[in-house]
Amino acid sequence: MTKELLFMIDTHGKTKEEVVKEAMSAINKRKEKSGYFGKKGMRTAECVSAGHPDKVCDQISDGLLDEYLRNDPDSRVAIETMGGHGHIYITGEVTSRAKLDVENIVQNIYSNIGYSDKPLVHVNIVHQSPEIAHGVDTGGAGDQGIMVGYACDENEEMVPQELYLARQLIKKLPKAFGPDAKSQVTLDDNGKVDTVVISAQHKFGQNFEPLRDLAATLKPKNIFINPSGVFLTGGFSADTGLTGRKLAVDNYGPQIPIGGGCFSGKDATKVDRSAAYMARRIAVDYLRKEKAHEVLVKLAYSIGVAEPVMAIAIIDNKTEVNLLETQEYDLTPWGIIDFLDLKKPIYLCTASDGHFGNSYIWDK
Image 1 (cartoon, rainbow, N blue to C red):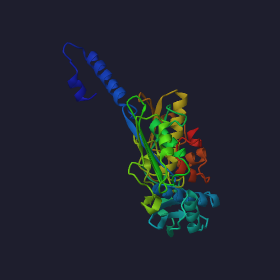
Image 2: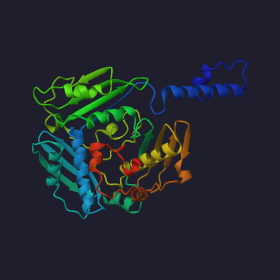
Image 3: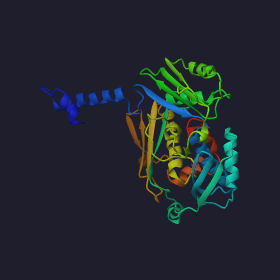
């Protein structure tokens, strides 16, 4: 109970029990008004297409990860990609029996996204640090960190509605546009669509009406289509991209807390990725079995230690479950890998389509 609340409550002539009851009522009203998970009030989320420079880098990192896993499921991979203006740079740490033609794989991924130019590919990949490897070899987490999982009942994908709608716009983008594109959806206090923004790469003189028609399907009050006027140049020709720079898009939008680590380019021994997927699975499980409106799960790890140092599920901002006490799940890195079957080459599509809400095993 905060001093601020006690100060606001008239305690004159009231018993201690009455004061405490009134204070707790005030706390609950504040929670209802603000929404722990940010569901009250206006809220906005964006989504980007597969051809957005940052997403191109995510796909290259995850495409390489998939190829390493396809040839050696025990590969340890941590690959970062940066691209821009005729060059793509690949760097990171890999320990694997697989030997890849990295440059050829990168060029294929890039062209499959929809780009016709052929950037120069620079590769600097080394072995994983033996010190990090030791902590993982003994069953421990590959790094410290906090991972967040979330699920809600706003739509079939169990993600915040503003993110869901922004994604739908990108998925339905007319093929005549792109490959570089972005969408943004703002909901008003009542959850109705207030504003839609679509920016899509286009040809000279191309009619924007198909984009406007797409935005209009959400029945917003305001529509902005390519509001800068011209979007002829996109991708690496216009901007620089980097792996892991679209964290809110990859997670649940900006209203939900983010653990901090990105996903793409990392094999499942990195809890940044695997534990975030597990946290999502737990959130989905609790959403269903508790018939809840929303569930937030937080996991935290220490490098080299198998068991998490924290594991909680918060249900509808009312009930907190200590998952270390209930022991419903094996939350060790190897337990998660086995449970979610994370040694398979499944990651390229997560980088383009989204990590949550696309019927992956951690969404079910």
